[in-house]
Length: 455
Image (cartoon, rainbow, N blue to C red; front, side, top):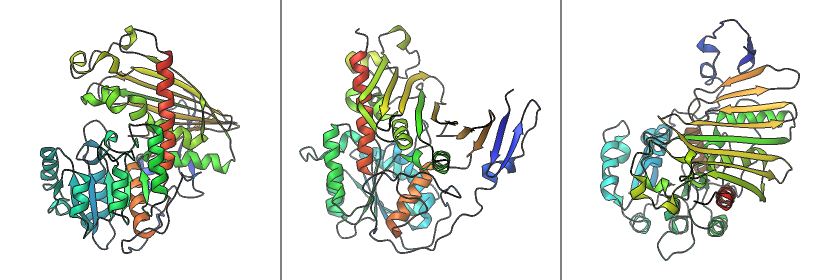
């Protein structure tokens, strides 16, 4: 057994061949509550600070901030929710559930002033379920609107403070008004003082159109945050801290995301023409983290290969619907994709994405290499564990972040910025920056389609 250093803040224990087990109070969970900065509640209003691009966010010199889950006293906060689907209201597939986090953050101050979704029965079912929970008061009088324009018209006299934009990306991320999908533009013009939280990816349309939306939002007063929540992970911020404190230049990033597909029954996700494929829709989080650690990618260097559905290694046995009847052959997603690229800094990057596992547990990790250092983050979504190897020793430190919730940290930051113009950490993903991640995911998809084996 190779020695491993188990780290809990400033105390390290080396575990060799013995059966030593650490008591729970040596974990991060036992001490995370210490030293958290408290702030007094202020009235909700227009933020005085808006970020036009991603903050470098090279870690923090002391405590890694975590979200404050005790709601502060203060005035009601009016929230408009767009989309009654999984990202806003949760599913069995993963930990995403924006409504749950905003309920945790705001408590009794939360007032959901509207739910926008053309699928009225689904929206009604969501509201009915919420009215049976501890957060029932937030949804007691929530109306359902079929369109964003209907919501803007009805709420013009009492506009929302916050908007959660969690509708499918096919219905937003464009400047073209012909189909009503210019959602961000409608919201910024209809609610000029509202803060906008936009889910990733920012579009399913062209990168140029998404960039036009970003340019439009840059000229508006709205605070905008895009849902790349892993940037807010305490483990990710610890990695940034190590890079900063040691003045390290990243040499390489290597990311791997292998999903458990057995319960993924959303046909649109398996259809490239709708959700754009797993690199654009799902691996986008790890493409974004790669950029967050190493900077901008030279897109001309992107190379990729894929395992397609018609190849023997790509034949899956547990797809939960009849793909043969529901997804046209030329519209089916790749089963595995491997991509490499070079960053403008001179570093190199690598990504693997697979649709291969069964059951419910995904396999996810990202590793960052620098001179003398290896920073490996395992399972950032559920049980984040960071393994750190430093110069002068082959011993790996092990940092556990079992109490961390990056979704809550992200939402807490967004709400604090909107209310006060300040927060423990800045908004880490602007719309303009998210467009650059979107551009990278498309570069990978196109590169893999150019090299795929013909059927």
